[in-house]
Every structure is written in structure tokens, then in C-alpha cells.
Length: 355
Image 1 (spheres, rainbow, N blue to C red):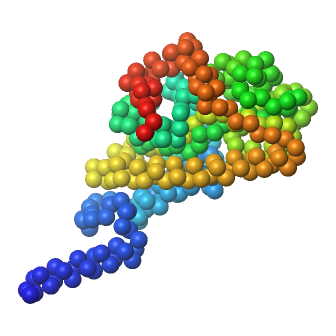
Image 2: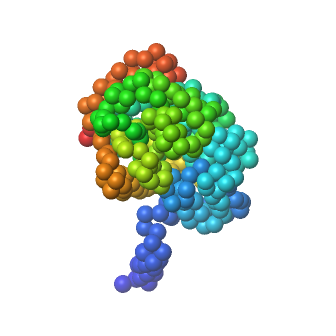
Image 3: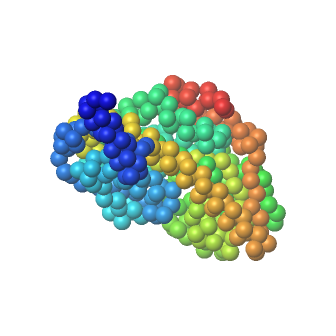
């Protein structure tokens, strides 16, 4: 047995043992050369989002921080500012474009003043399943289209994730309903400064403007009959204590991760590849896993809460959701959204098949 063979074997054993000890078997960047780490100048990125640290979005942002810091061996540190503590969601868009912050991790709707078709992503019936949304957001055509469109408004696109596939309308009525179309003509609360969504227009609500966060007093006093907030926020506010029913519908809630272009361009090409093609896929997969788990838990809490006071949570069937989605697709506004998005990217959504 040669000494060369023994040295090689010992080195391999020690390397495997080290990877096992550190738990880095699936970590991005393993096998990088020391010189490649030294290409980086120490820096700190400011990452902002508008939601709690303990929710799916906050957890996904924390995973991004963890992976970036691990793979760069601490050369890049990421400071997270959750809950809008540094900038609100709307202001964060301007912040990441101007360089006041380096990364935003918020819903796409904060970009709708700059990207005209963004509301399209929130249409009822657009997404058939978690897998559908995931496959679209990880499709090369989708990623290429988003990279181009976000660049046009001053951001570097890193990716979209899937965090929720359930929306809910909360209401007071003599009896429960099983489709949003049964709510046509109802007084529906929308916050000051916002505009009705295409989905809400299609349903045919009577819109009533209310101060931000005042949905509880508005529905308690009879000013409105229904409103919508996320399931997680509904659970947090114990919405069953002031409404009689909830209708759960299908509408995706995601984050888009956008970086300041100057911050991005300051990275060596090697590290751009690591962040874009190795870190982000792991973040997206993690958000999907955590989102599904959190949503199941929140839906059960919602159902238990209503049951405890004699209320009821109903769910819109897949057939009814598809019918509404097909109807909205023919709306002139939606046709404009699809044209602005681009037919290639829209085809990725509409041509998807379950697998």
C-alpha cells in the first residue's frame, strides 16, 4: 500500500467527517476554494420585509440570511428588519431601487405602481395547487421574464416563492355561503388609499372605504358586511369573535426577492451564481415546505375558533374557483395584464398540467 494512496484516503475521510460534523452535506458553496471566499470584501446587507419574524415570510427571510452567511463564511452578513421597522412595504420598493436597503422580501403587490400587471397574480382561480405555483415560479421562462421586467424598473430579481394558497373573506350573514359570487352586492370594506382588486370588481361588491386596520369596528357597526385579510391575520385577531362566518378561497400569497442592482453588481460572478442558482432555490423550497405546514395549522385554528362560538368556515370548491377564474380571464383588465406580462410567461401558467 503506497504512502500516496494512504494520504489521499486519509484526506477524503477527514473531509467527509468535517462535512458531517458541520452538517453541511447539502449546503450551497461546499467545495469552494479559499481564494474564492477571499474575493469578497466584508459587507453587510440590509434586508427588509413587512411581516412578523415568526411567519412564513419571516422564516424564509431568515433562511436566506443563514445560507448567505454560511456560504460566504461570514464575509457577507445580512441584517433583517422585519415588520416594516426600517421601511414600510411600499417605501421598501423605493429603498431597494435607490440603495437605501439591499434586499426586499415582500409580496409582489408592493410593486404594482411600477409593474402594471402585478394584480394579475392575485386572481381567484389562477393557481390550481401549491405545485402549480411552485412550478411556474421556478420555470426558466418565468425567471427570465421577471429578471427583465424588474430590471426595467430598477431592481435585480432573485426569485418568487410560494407561501400561502388560501385567502379568506370574513362576513356576517343569515346563513353561510360557498362561493364568492354569492356575495355580489354586499358592502365590502377596502382600506383608504387602496383600490379594488380585479377579483373584487368581478364579484360585484359594493365597496366601502374604511381606515386602515378598522375592519373590526366597521363590520361590528354594520358599516360593512364583509372584508378580507389573510388567514394568519384572521387567527391573530380572533376574527370569529366579531364575525359569524368565513369563506376560504384559493389565491396565492408569495414573496418576491429583489436586490439593489449596485449591490448585485458588486458581487464577483462566482458569488452571483451561488446566490442566484444555489441559495435562492433552497430558500424557495424552504418557503414552500414551511408555508404548507403553517397554512394547515392556521386553517385548523380558524375552524376551531369559529366552531367554539357556533360559527362556521366554508371552503370554495375547486370547480367553483375555476369557474370564477375562467370568467375573470375574459375581463378586459385581465387581458391587458396578460399582454403586459407577456404571452410566454402567461402560457407557463395556463399550460401547466398536474404531475
